[in-house]
Image 1: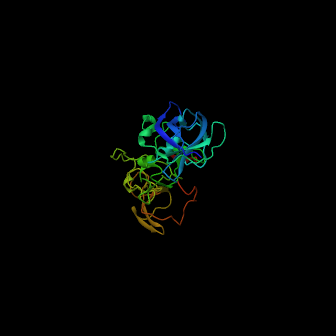
Image 2: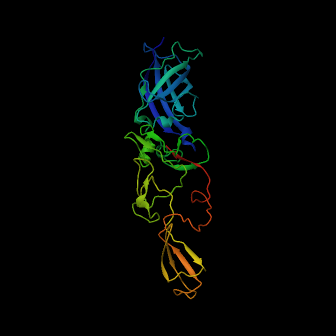
Image 3: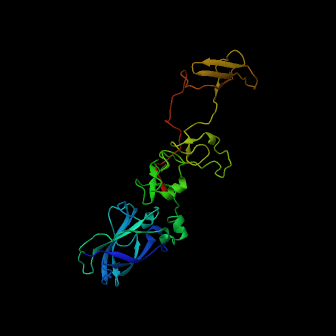
Length: 333
């Protein structure tokens, strides 16, 4: 049985020109395979397995592929990407770039098949796992670093599907670990709530209409006159005129006027105390002056309960709303 090792390790992560940056992310991996006596492996095409983990031992499998690799006197060079080889099951990410978004990553290699097609005497991985430093992928293009296919973390979009696509999450208020989604947390922070120092909440936009912040530059535009009383969507979230705050449904304060041709009430104006509150009235004649008959107007004011006498038939729904269509709101991470 051979004990495997890697020497002359060289790593480079970059992005090829493409309309789909996810599909074009490539990790250039070079090394040399030697046995326990430091003798280089014989030349030929090997089937190698490449796995990326989040720790040097045990841990979570982030990404993996098996693919044919040409070895020359033990040396090999391979481009690992989202379109290369066969996916290994049980990985957390489908895209290699997502694996490198975590603070620490380690790569592991195993031999799946020898040049003659036979399985090796041992399929054990090469140990120890090699840590991939940040410099290994610092050559990513600026566009790929700041945006995935032109979409920055934190972007919210309506989506007509039931399940979000890769790289997106439903805006359902779910609590996430900050380490697992570092780029999204750096963008939205705890604006939508948090229960601890290690977590943060996704926005919960289920059943809500979205509204632009009133004066995001720090000045109030008064397009939301009640911005100061906005509340947090969840404990630990933002309040007031800030991102993530919410408002309950409400009507703008107003009055109703009802014209009547019934017999006048004695006097020109005053208050009638009714079962539901106070009915403020004023009698106005046809030429605009106070008093007279038959023109009489009633102005409602001070009522805070539903009238119980002479009320109109109730029609409508449980809320005031425009015509609408359901979508899922999703957020890029």
